[in-house]
Amino acid sequence: MGNKVNANGLRLGVLHTWNSRWFFNDRHIYRQAIIQDIKIRELLFKQLKSAGLTQVEIERNLSGMNIILHAVRPGMIIGRGGKGLEEVKNKISEPILESTNLWDFPTQNYGDRPHGDNKFNGVTPAFVIWNLLQRYTKRGKL
Image (cartoon, rainbow, N blue to C red; front, side, top):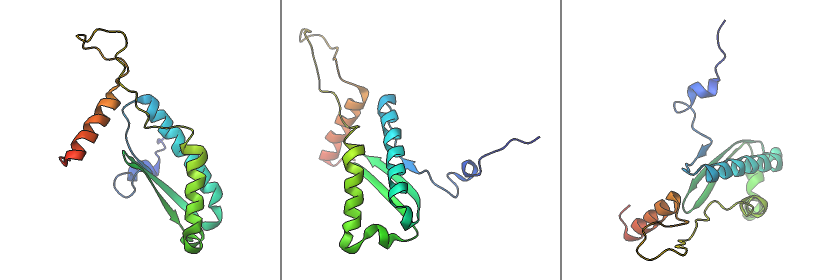
């Protein structure tokens, strides 16, 4: 007897690409991002069913999020003068993105420790990476 293999798994990276393109090291932020992706996809597929939405791709970076919609009738999504796109953006941003904020990094909290102690409370690896990226992108190194 043969094993069943998902056909999309075989073609991933060769013919198809991933539907979500982002990476988080922290498992709590990763979990929130997956939940957000699922909610966004469910909302979009439910709302844009008449436009023939076939695929939703989500890309995340430090500056924000890009959502790429593949539809049979893109004119129904865009609407007259782009009003339909604005409605879609507002529906996504209101309940889903504001409920969980992935970019809340803790501030440096030194607590009651003396100044000579090198242990920092509240500084996570994500905060350090975010700070380094901000510092080097401002200088034009990256």
